[in-house]
Length: 170
Image (cartoon, rainbow, N blue to C red; front, side):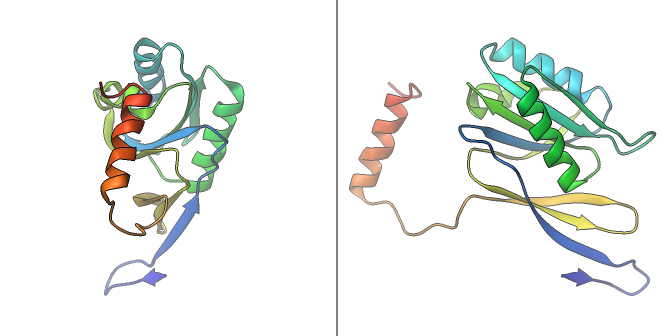
């Protein structure tokens, strides 16, 4: 879809699918400074030291490089490929294993450079990107599938049991 207003440049909307290895969560966010990769790295290793992860950050000024960190080379390479695919400035992609996003989200939100988080999920993800003459930016994400109904009593019991089974409720 392309949209153009009077006196404005054309904008193209893209839905960019993210690569999701098995048993991996993804966090997509926006940040504003080159030291994002170092600070998110530190936030993860101090909050969830058992986590395996790869992180990529799209620098949007100066050299405009994809900066990366992580403690798992395969996840780092996946994060880089996802960052390249969306090509959105000041965006980061974190691929995470051996931890859930809930384990690290508060630490990531508290990184001073982080402006927003678009998603934290193990679902298939498409990043909705606007592309103009200047570059590309994230508008939002499509996280998983649309609802298929409303939970019933059995579904509530299943949800409660799941949260207790994985240790998030007592």
